[in-house]
Image (cartoon, rainbow, N blue to C red; front, top):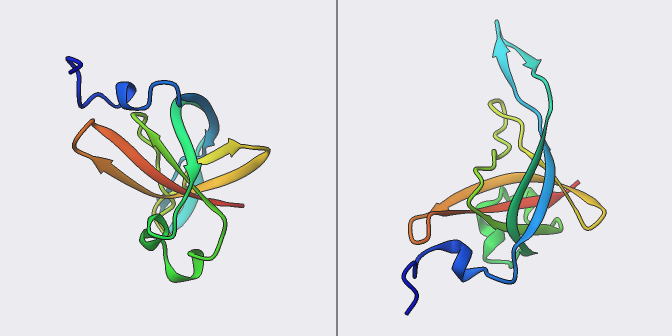
Length: 117
């Protein structure tokens, strides 16, 4: 058995790829959204089609849209209405908005669900 059995990089060996995107930070100032400076993202992850079970974490109106899941050790920012802009991921000639990020204790990685824009 490998020494780092729970290491996500071992589990996804051969499947990892470089994923790129954009982070669009911002905050509310006196009740108005003030956009920050966009920043380019580049990280390693495994991208797959989201399953119907994966999509249960999305709002009902979003569950019928084409979605992907991303397994990564990089901390992605989800879209939270009225609070944060989600990270935008560029993958397979499309743009995907991160809507949900869950942390997995075993392996210490994140599973993100992103919706095609």
